[in-house]
Image 1 (tube, helix red, strand yellow):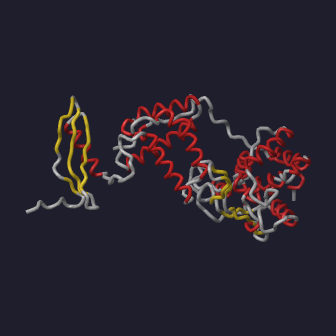
Image 2 (cartoon, helix red, strand yellow; image 1 turned 90 degrees about the vertical axis):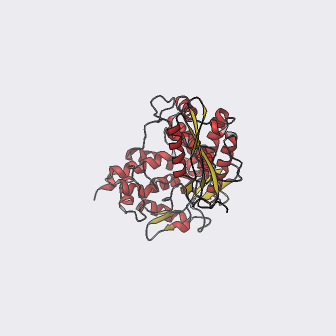
Image 3 (cartoon, helix red, strand yellow; image 1 turned 45 degrees about the vertical axis):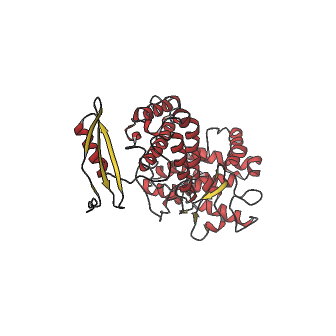
Length: 394
């Protein structure tokens, strides 16, 4: 009579063997809920710890992924390539940003693979990962080191899912403080209200800036706090003159190997309505009256397509800033300026996050802000901030 199978979710007898000095192997068979029986084994310095680790492995059991070719003997670069393909697939489905994919790919190719690519997956350990992250921090920046840690963690987690690693060694990597980093994060700087008015005045008098369509674009940034790609993707169909609102609905970026693409935005809260200050509404109404395509983009290229963010920055914005004496200002500075002006006006972190589109606004107050019905207080504050002092009275 055939021996009855193990009940689903149970294991057979655990056997422990001594395989070397202070090295024990605990083994058993485990029948998963898919009906398949898997051999499971764990090692430890003592018999008791080996058996304990085996029981923990059964408790946390995840069936290994088959037919992927990723095993403990695979090269780390093979696991990294598989992880990158998954990341690209996520970006195709808009679960990830293509900008993030490009950033991760660059760190992977220039930092991680030269250091670890030829290791076997089973050789990847916490000390190796920790040493690489700290080296990147000390030679570059804490921010870059944290990106490297995130990539390593993702690859090792994939290896765990495929049964090539028992646990993710990156979880125990130490904190990556910036105190010893070569490139320390600079203090956040924004324009004061007086500097905003001065900068706008210089934009309006600069013929080259006007030819490059910068004055209206800069005002749009200051009215919305938008990211560069989101502002360049704004269309007239998103603008509601009567409600004094613009619906931000996407982000134009350039991804390696894919050219210029439009995605749904950097965060879950990117697609949102933004109430506009009266001066911005007036600017947009006037601009729409002279638009070549009243159904197209608000700030199109000469052929009506989305403008390239890098071209706007490098060929138009930065040359103007040098002429105006504001070399330190970037489009991101304008975004920070909006947050500062709103904060100075007494808006809550929640209201500011609604304007800026933070899904998890650690940049505002480390609290997730998910509202989709922002207050007009932000638009009114920006309206006051952009008027000369003499016009604020009454």
